Length: 420
View 1 (cartoon, one colour):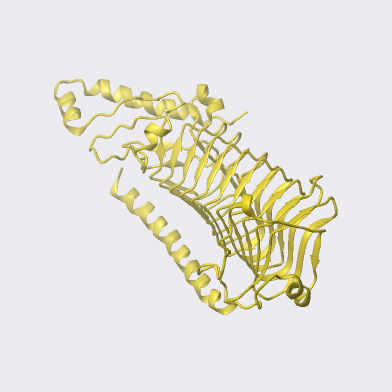
View 2 (cartoon, helix red, strand yellow):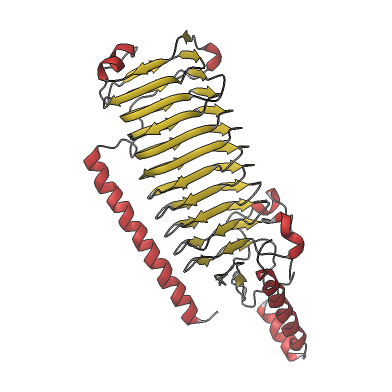
């Protein structure tokens, strides 16, 4: 590692982080203009959470077209931030087009503790259109086409819902300032999809065993995806024509295809995620993806289906993407100066001929080594401290070490073949 290379990557990282800082400042500025509540705590949530003790109200599908209808059906509240309208404890089972629809409202309201069953998986569960200031909380939704569908809306919080056996669990389109947190999403075809949904946050959700991706972000920007548990889906997180998003501190495991996937994804930051046991590679960036930063992630035994071919755990076919200080568990790194950073770059598969110049010797969380045992074949299992290298050089064994290092490099060069 040369001083010049270190400065080059440091400069690139600073430039990207500066851009992120400007975006965050912009978000804070505009949030004041639009009176967004997602940057503060929820204005009100009912304490009633024990489903077994709830007394549900059996009801036909509900359609609310305006403020007057919202006020009429609410059990309490005046629609203000401090005293929102409350819609609660409805049990709706029907195969009609939509079970609960709310449109064209600006009052604050909470829709909570409802059970919605669409029977045939061909209709909407909760549909919000042109709505602001809503909380959807602690609902159970099943057998619908889109369990929660948010369209042309802003300042909507989706909290602590249980969503199973739907075609799509949560789908947001043409919306701003969505906050989606602590939901349990499982056994759906699509799990959580954001389409042209900007300035939003997805955090602390448990997303498991869905047929397609855990989280999809399409044509969106300034979305933060953090601290989600995403397991046993086809893909973990997928970005499609999306830019300036931050994906951080997620646990993404046992994906049937890729862990992280970017198509025409630009200027996104992937940092401090744990990506493990993907059947395909842990990270894929296509030919139209550029200027993404992938740093300080832990990649553990990904691309299991190609282990015999000794492929790298990430592939980059794009341009100007940066991989830096990631952990790759299928190698034991040569570390001459004992700085816990590899002395050789980790080559990334793909047409970009990219590399991680500073692969880390261990994951950020040391306990991962015990919790997630290595499933890939270990490559170049050699760590040699500086004092031992000097001793080998003095005794004339240095030439053997050089031969081992050259073999180490050749094994990675073989991994640059295109996937079948």
